[in-house]
Amino acid sequence: MAFGAPRFPFSGAALATGEGEGVALGVGGSLGFGVGVSLGSGVGDFIVGDRVFGATPLDRLGAYTQILAVSALIVGHAPMSIPLATAAAVPIAALTAWQALFLPDHADVQPGQIVLIHDGAGGTGSFAVQFARWRGAHVIATASGHNAAFVRSLGAHAVVDYRTARFEDVVGEVDAVIDLVGGNVQARSMPLIRKGGALASIVSLPDQELAARHGVRATFMIQNRNRRMLELIGQLIDNDNDEWHRLQKRHDVGTFFR
Image 1 (cartoon, one colour):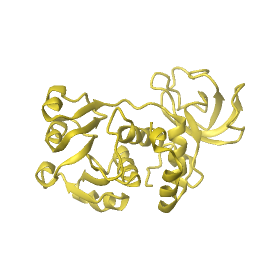
Image 2 (image 1 turned 90 degrees about the vertical axis):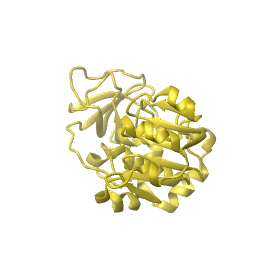
Image 3 (image 1 turned 45 degrees about the horizontal axis):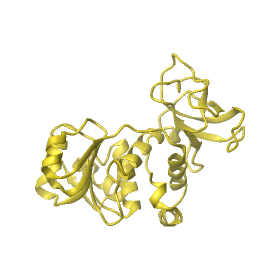
């Protein structure tokens, strides 16, 4: 997996059991990483000294502080194969991609389906390409020609250069669209989706009348913090591609992707 490596001052975490307990107010930032320095009563899955990563709730920021109290329900054990500062870039982009792709209320991508991912070279898009390929989908992504080789290296079967071609002129019918761009890209994507298929947008609420005319489900997704998903993503980062497939087979996908 390829990530950026931003620097964040958050270096320690106090883990609590209840969501929102002890959050530092008045301090910005939502991405975080660190080492557990203290535990609340009832926290049984972490020990002091564990490397952790996660994102604060949307209404309770504070990741730019040195020490942050955060619920143990929304952070996970950080991947061991990448630096903590790099791990900090993972939670929001990766969880957003995961949930847009796999939650049943959104794209609900299944093995063998064809999925179109707009902005496949971006932070969320680069995760979405990898997750969809791991899931066994046929992945088509839009990106600039400059980034086409990079997106293919992430697992895309085909890449459409949006600067030189209209994607609707070269992409056939798809089962799902992950909209990371919005605007007219979202509207132009609707006719490509098979009846009964889905469009999941993280940008704006799709036009429901347009979706109904094309017989597709179209949703606007707001990402939820989720430790269970975050920890699987960490496992995927730490393992090679063959192990990714073994991990997928070991999980009950009927419940895990939810």
